[in-house]
Image 1 (tube, one colour):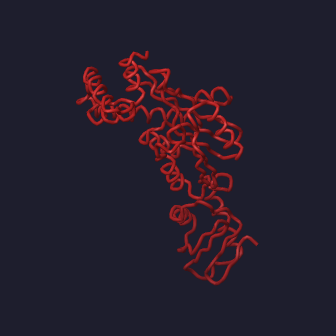
Image 2 (cartoon, rainbow, N blue to C red):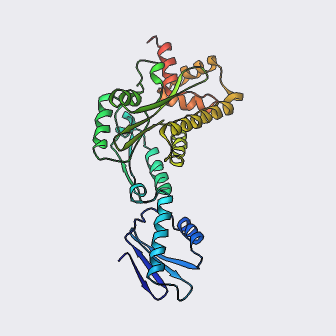
Image 3 (cartoon, rainbow, N blue to C red):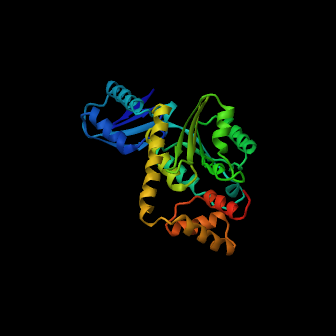
Length: 309
């Protein structure tokens, strides 16, 4: 029996209710049922409802109620095939792998998934190193777990355009060279250099999404992805690209009035280098003074100053 009735209470059974929002569900049910009711409890496969009216609770009513509940779940794509999603998050970078830099993005991304798709499974993978072989190995290990989504964080920038000593966009290269169903969008800065490459791969039943590493960009784009998760992948990529362009344009506008000249940048780099700071630390200091430099752009200038290129 898919339901039971006792006095003014109906228990509907054998339906998948994992991850539903009780408040949203209650609102939708109230539009269908013209009787006052109160949801007493929900488990992963049953719901208990009290009705504040007598002489209506019978088998026909309970079966109709169950059918309406199933319609609501299906209409909101919250049936068994769509409610429970399995996500795997793969942070990238030697510094994260070695524990030098804290992985701030993965917990934030996990929290966003929980809020948007409660009931989903979320696994944070071992971080990937900054080399193609290591990244592909980590990726294949996670693909073998048959997730619905793999979210790759980092490894999408254009640092190699500034210096051969810097890591290249390993994520896009590995995905392009090892998977057939791949879509990508490039985002360029005002001076023509590559900011980021956004990529989506369809591999069997898994969608692979690459996101940039900086926290602001990463979280903003993932929010767009979650809001459009049921859209066509090309539509998703175009919306992600548009959002990332907005972010970079905003950063440029904020810094336009206080941007340092190239001469001032070089002077500051020399000063901070003499203090023993590396490219990442120098970039942070410069950005406090009105610059908008990535660490690899600082490294490029350091290499020129030190006659390495």
